[in-house]
Image (cartoon, rainbow, N blue to C red; front, side):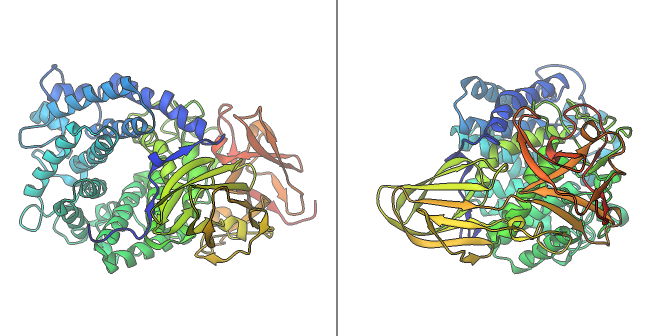
Length: 621
């Protein structure tokens, strides 16, 4: 592999999360969300579809034609969990699952249960024959998720059973698609990410080439996508010419992630330039203050530039995950903290709101305003235990256990601290093992302590992110801005003040580090008012409230009915206090009769009105 990202993440399995905020969520994911997802996949026939395709049991295909993908995502999450902690029962259950998947695979490698169970009963819109309607069928989307799960499984267990299934299928794709074969692209991107992971695991250049082929074919008029369909699926023009995020937000986020992968692995400057343009468009004109993307319920798509309605915001949980994946890759490509700033905003707000504290109830959309009447969440206005299309619950279960892989990164003798998560990580620098012990109560306070453990002095550049929110910039660009200043940042090494030598948003500390050295960072956790670009009609004369990385909201349960019409005075002093007995422990922001809670925690006390953007009163009050 001659090319790759210049920066490498410290793998999630090399980072032990020990803090009071994320560690309980990771445990809930392992003990509740993961088995619950498998249970629901069993109950809804998603898993028995594989047994039917294998000929082990009789019966018709159950559910949506792309339900195979849900099973693969849960299996990926299970593999990550196995990598983090020994679980013989889960290991054995996965073996049984893999046997069913292998049994469902046809002799030439094809794997798509709805067609294998009964080719004559396949819905017409899926296509009468293999690959005949890729814009709808999800045949490639499904197996892309399988590739990701198979790579995760072999890396967690050393067993090649699942990987062999994936490789057999990939060999079929190599025979079918390409310049001399079928020249068409999937309607829902994902196969590209999966192929890149197969390439990384095997070193087989053909998989990377096929991933690039699928990307390069977009906008080439070789497939059936025309008109609105083309924009919906990002097939309206070649990807290297795209400069505005359009269409289905999850599909776009997956495609942009794959573009970053291919840019890194091939050093393709046109891919890099396109990725940069698309990122600037999303962050500067199409992203919600929560980090959510996708403003329309119809077709789950981006709106026009600056079209960011609140009550009808879609902001799918899957789209938040895709946005996080993309921004992490952009950081690895460019080494700039601004990408991690967006990643962090997504993690604590747009993503985290999508899963309840119990790990068993979920939001599909994540609006920024609710009237308590409209059933925005697929027929409900509270988190639901499952959906007919349950891509979001199954995405959550694979994303959370990989979270620790976003905390640290390394480029030779440069070590990055990206996220503030109580944790322990070990890396090799200058041939020596160095352990970092991070202690913090983040996001409730801005004090971070990092202790270095090494058996001998070692020189390296420690770069710790100074968040944009601590420097007066909520989001890169001009879409959002603060009313007030950001406060003072204090950096110390061994109790001695250290100047902030900034490098792309990171405080850089180049020195010889000794065992027991301690770096402390104090970030100003002020309550901040946020204003939006006036071109966003929904937010004119409105103000949002943040503290640290958290966006806050008002619920009727705390503030009475009509929270979306009440005024917040500019002059009103707002205070923050921690309440251990409220919503699993949260900071609230209060003042002037208002009580605001973190956005991620809303709707845990029943159906309620909610607003992130509050009416702004410029008058003294």
